[in-house]
Amino acid sequence: MVGLGVTDFRTRRLALPLRAGAGLRILHISDIHYVPGQRKKFAWLQSLAQLQPDLVVNTGDNLSHPNAVGEVLEALEPLRQLPGVFVGGSNDYYAPTWKNPLRYFRGPSSLDAHPEDLDWQRLFSSFESSGWKNLNNQTATLSVAGQPLAFSGVDDPHIGRDDFQGWPTDAAASPEQDSSTGLLRIGVAHAPVSAALNTLAGSGAELILAGHTHGGQVCLPGGRALVTNCDLPRPRAKGLSSVQVPARKPPGHPEQPARSVPLHVSAGIGTSRTAPVRLFCPPEATLIEVQQETT
Image 1 (tube, rainbow, N blue to C red):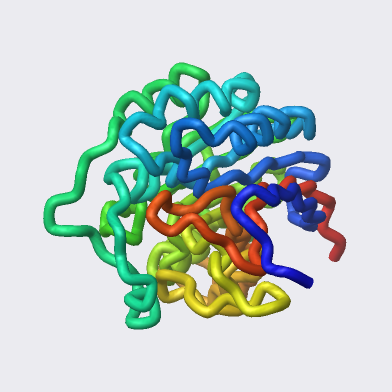
Image 2: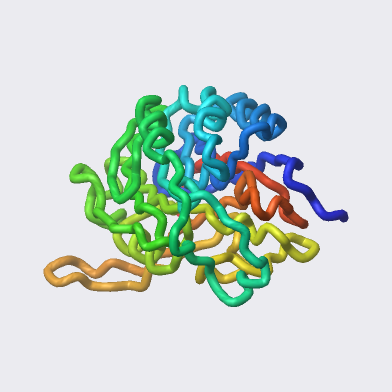
């Protein structure tokens, strides 16, 4: 096996049993890090609509250049015709700067003292004009392919913008309290920081989607990540894992049993323009096909 580059785009399929939402096809995209002129990436992004997903979940870091907004919006135009939700990542708000790659071995990256602002307002407003729900510290409900969905999202925890707002008022307090409505609760964040994951899972999420890690980006053979750029353990840098919720008994409520909440971390589609390399970690999008959970 040889090292894989930045344009070896892949689409991965994942069958995921859940309590609700059987038959739903969720396209999870993340970390596009678009730079003007990336025509192969542009064409591949446009081709994703051919997968015919029911829902698009975009977990941020769409940009990697001050002039990228118009082109990435055009690249995503076919997907923006579909129901979708999104959160922002640090590279939607601020342009990347060159950093010594060895710094990542000392812990998660941090913002520069005076970062260059990107036109995230135009990006986000265009997503919203397409009908995508903004989940940056917000909640939303959607009916997609006949499936009722409740979302709770946080702005990027990696740069301290997260402020959990609970769940929509028409979502039950927890999956255990009401399994009759068929409502599926999905938590969304850019960076899979443990505090944000635990908050979403502990509050009732039944699926959590995140990005940020680039799957490790530069990996050992077999896709073994060396870093995650957050406190997520390296074996969970991409793909499906879980967040454990311990049993608890809220005052005045029945005891809630321990739960294991599926977490999908996208390996991402791009890289920062200051570090344009991927090794043993191809860029990818994931089509999650929800199946009926069996008991």
